[in-house]
Length: 293
Length: 264
Image (cartoon, rainbow over all chains, first blue to last red; front, side, top):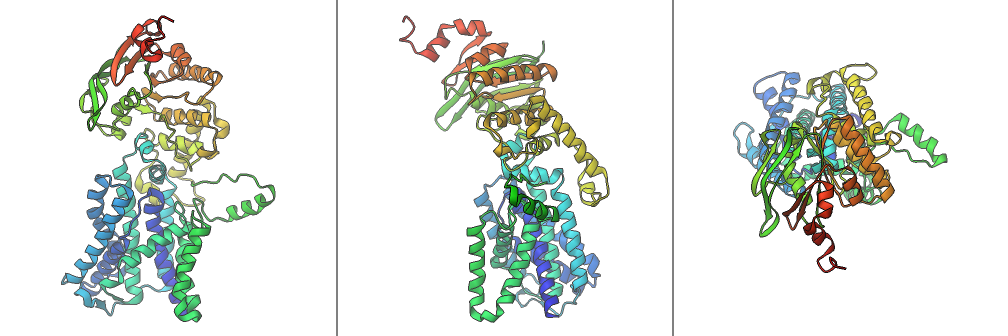
């Protein structure tokens, strides 16, 4: 039961991280407000199932859609103004806080007291199935011409624009996708912990998500998934170290960034072929030349 | 010959500094036009004004009879104007082939967003996989056209400098333009390489029926391939004419060589 709980948490975090990877890793914009989209997803799903009695498998896509729509509220003004990376990050930071305050004051969300007694829908098979579906969609999105446009923007936005790519449209599309993923993550979280409250979705949660993507490797899907699993599992494994575990956790993050600034996977993807090639090339020392897609 | 691009009284100032002032010239379709001038004369600014990177302070840019002044770059590209950059701007972490494929997407959308999500299953051939394969073949054709097909799977930033310039040209061609703007295509090349490049530009221009507008400092290349030249200095028009006329123009010689040398 304990192991199951951890696995569920790993996959929930991986779902949100994969979504954010599409935005931060492939479009090149940092967000520090993605917990807000998790919150929107969590509350949408919780209200739909608990207050209105809508079945979970309908409420879940609703949560994704709602998070996506909310992302347009912050995305349209900031991305249309072509805010540079750091300015955009600050805007998302403010947005995240605003969303939390909003949730604390709306009557339908039951304010700061939160919503308790949610049904346990996020069981292991369900979460696993949704995890697979999200990864499948993400992979399809990234390894397509739509993903290519996003990557082009990350690589050189002026050249991308001169290749006929509409920066606003492509960035907004990836933001929508990442917010929808975060919404699904939040919804699953709500029905796993079975209690939600606005202060579960603070900037700390947003920062952790972004850290997961950066540590996993900007420009990789498998990297952030691996990082999400590590970041959930390590504090659990370190429970024996008691008060030192969070210090060790921080140290791990620092170590990853110092030893592998490009992240665990860098621009590459984890694959069986990749491992075989890696060991084959160990002897010959030749340039692997593997890049995205 | 019809007119491809018309520049009318184009001006651009940044704060109090005038980069380009009152330029007026035409580019006929099917010709190779060159713009030359000393460093800092405003040549690249002209390119940026045409392609929508900058908004002009005054004046008009008219392409095939249509006013495109101040339109965003991605719209201008769609109308058929592609360019390369003075300081190479490739998608560095992607392979040469992927650089070209990215550009091909514009005029060759092989599938839509819904099929991206739902019709791309592992091991099952479908619309998306077929489309991608076709684009890769097409991209290979452009790499062959500029003679760098051997580097198709090499990471762009790992390619030799001169070939990166050619890759930029290949990427611009993949946008299927009618008007191609080349910003110092021979920068950093030795005379031999720049001669080879001038043949390449001529070849491509004839094969693809392009109009070419280029900035260049290698005078041998400019005089060799340009049908028409426009000379600017300190952002203002200095002279216009065919290469022979420009070479004999005293104002141009003065701008390039300085006045004191004239009698020497």
